[in-house]
Length: 206
Image (cartoon, rainbow, N blue to C red; front, side, top):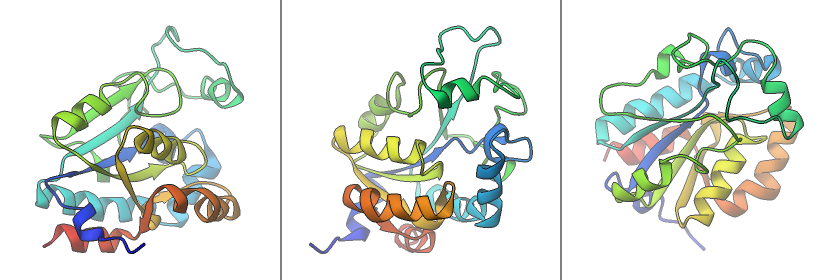
């Protein structure tokens, strides 16, 4: 069935979500070396920055979906290997340089920052869904990391909540590349409309 991408991306009904675009995750201080390397190699931040600029020009709500940890680790449990690994290395303490969004994507006045202290995805246990609904959003544009977990989880949650999901393929990444391609081929293309950062920019420039 043909998809009317311009209708899906109507600025009055869309929102841009940036998943874990934080210094301690994808920046120079990233704890996940292979992921940060993939972000650099694919110039993912530059592609997200183009979508971000287009969103702001078009008046599309911008959401920074971040993660953080209390200094004492309170409220979070290591109930899987990934969360256990996240407790090692540089902690993403509130207000720390590592917890901050990378400079090219830094929050601006009017943006929304939705932070979670436990879990792997941005909807569960946060105000994200309520904020989106209050803004009349019907389509979320998912960008950031990682295709392995965060983007996949965001997409599943958004679809379950009744949203349309658009993913600019060059504005997300994961590791290794072969696995990312498999996730798109066998899962994400069945859940979301896959496009490019340039095509989203074009839609929001009209």
